[in-house]
Length: 238
Image (cartoon, rainbow, N blue to C red; front, side, top):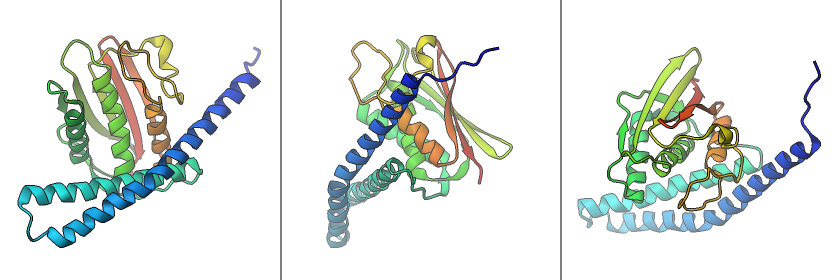
């Protein structure tokens, strides 16, 4: 039986795409570092000066600004290190249930999708980098809300332990991904065709997959048809 080696043109195209995504990540994350640093710094200064005089809701909002700016700083640093080939990972004990609910709440507020529901009871605590995993969840849940069917969006998140790995299953009831497109969804700068959808960079799933590789895991599409899609995140237990 004859082999089917990768064509030189395909290899060059893959290499070019990888270089493009690295340049994009490095440039974008570098340009974001300065404003994020200033946001976090001024929020911290305001907390120091006003913490004793602010009311509960105002104080909570200011703390949230500082916390989100610090998380964004960690993410941009991780992006820069990822682009440089030396991913920066800060593992800690992560309450997956709380993380999923937090990401979901932020997304539904941002998108104003009020009829969406999340099913994610009893998720475990795992040892990983919360900022990177949070970004992975954000990409997957954003896609579930974007590529919705006529029914109200419903996402189910479950986790199971197999051997030395955690498997996190994220299922939705969206429009699904046609078989002809399924092999391309992790390609950088490629977007699933959708009439009326806002055009983005096409790096969501690509970046999510790269972050999971940095965490020692991976991301795959387990199932997709007109009833919805199911993605699987694999992460090492230790």
